[in-house]
Length: 94
Figure 1 (cartoon, rainbow, N blue to C red):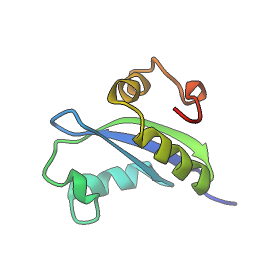
Figure 2 (spheres, one colour):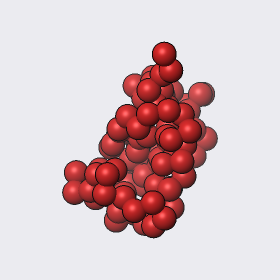
Figure 3 (cartoon, rainbow, N blue to C red):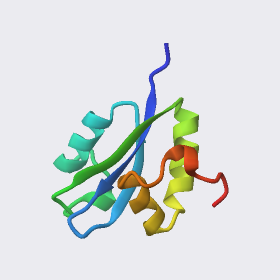
Figure 4 (tube, rainbow, N blue to C red):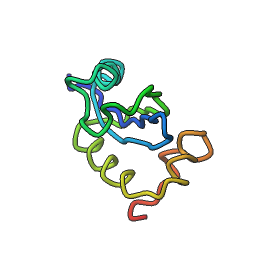
């Protein structure tokens, strides 16, 4: 059986939001916090907080959604993190 993939958002100490995908969000978040295997763009920007995560299905679906979320304005990402918006609410091309 294929692993379930998730999309997640990590908040930096400065309030920036990083979007990523993983089939093990807990492990990936620990890697981001540790530095060596984490995303280069998050290094030195801690403490980090896992602001949002949601299982979305297969790897392809997760990567497509990650691509779209990365293009959202910050206020829409914040609404997702705060529960004011769900992934079901997102328009495909906005």
